[in-house]
Amino acid sequence: MNINVSFEFFPPKTQMAAIQLRDNAIILEKMGPHFFSVTFGAGGSTRTGSIETIKLLQSETKIPVAPHLSCLGSTFEDISGLLEVYKNLSLKRIVALRGDLPAGEKREGDLNFAYELVSFIRKTTNDYFHIEVAAYPEVHPEAPNPTADIINLKRKFEAGANSAITQYFFNPDAYFYFKDECAKENIFSPIIPGIMPITHFDKLQRFSSICGAEIPRWLSKRLEMYGDDQESIKAFGAEVVYNLCQRLVAGGAPALHFYTLNQAGPTLNLLQMLGIQGFSL
Ligand code: FAD
Image (cartoon, rainbow, N blue to C red; front, top):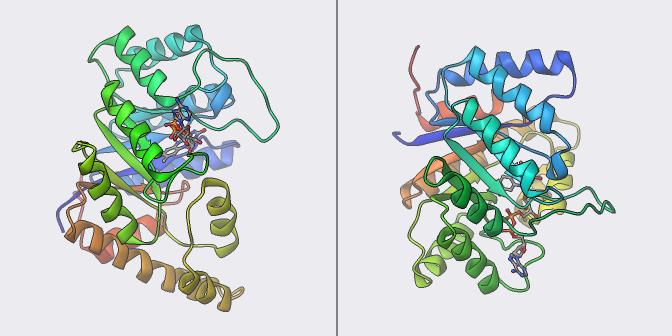
């Protein structure tokens, strides 16, 4: 299979986790990804960790790095400072987001929505960055309705975004229907499916309830049945996500973005099942 892939990492919290991330990035580099992305906590909570992770990936691999930039709780000055740092690191791609502050935390900032951030990046840096934004085939949890959410995506493209990466989902029809609805609003920019490998049922349930991704009943019931049998969960999860990727690519997905959770194994396994060979550097 011939399709662009990209891999997402988060800033590790310990020295040991940083070493593991480096080793996993070196393994995944061999698959020839289009870019690595690094998450960023809203309010600047991971500012130092995100920048260190970007530098680590730049020094240990040859893959372009795309920082996420979450604007909630940040001032124009904070954002300008970060854009300057990213330019100095020769980064050319940004994933521009609103972000989520930790529950109960309130922080004053100059930007409330991702489209305002996209607009600000364009105003201050023109066409220097390729800007990715987030999209939600299963609807963002705070959106008043699906159409309003698509109009919000349109606002992000009109503000200057180049492409979008989706929240993860397990029902390919959610993506295809979403793309059709986007086309009705004249959104034809690339919308790249975000892919979550399934490795742990509890963790997946926790993430999914926070970010509004649906685990279909047929899937959760089977994962639940395996209990502590991690091997069966991984094998079944890989089969499900492999089928999802196949249908997405066959249906015209422009690329696949993998939420690696800083692990190489599950993503690598999926790429091998899909026949994405990578290259040797
Ligand atoms: P927005 O596009 O601003 O939308 C947020 C909500 O506001 C939506 O419900 C939208 O419909 C609504 N809305 C927009 N404009 C208006 C308006 N004018 N009036 C009323 N409502 C409006 N989070 C992080 O903290 N760090 C990360 O690194 C990170 N990476 C991510 C990567 C991807 C690919 C994805 C899909 C999500 C990521 N997230 C990250 C999570 C994301 O920040 C959250 O989902 C957040 O709640 C919304 O961000 P957004 O950029 O989609 O916001």
